[in-house]
Length: 101
Image (cartoon, rainbow, N blue to C red; front, side, top):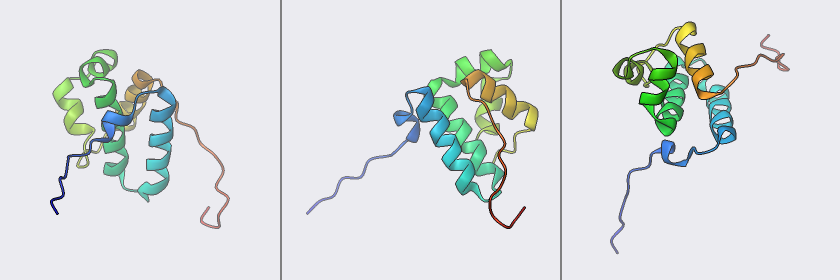
């Protein structure tokens, strides 16, 4: 029996703004403080929308965005907010309900 493996790219499955927001929310929840994990999630969404278009909307370089929005990226809060604005995503804060607060 032969098994064929194909590359999986989450960006191929993020089509609606609601998908993008749900994906980012889930990644933030699972990140456990890993900034690179969240940066990569933003990068996945930006690739789904077109990195060039996001670069144009943010005024940042496309190549720079690819690097910043990768698993090794450490975007500044300013960059994160600019990318979220360009993606039509709003970040929110909520009160923690566990004992870690």
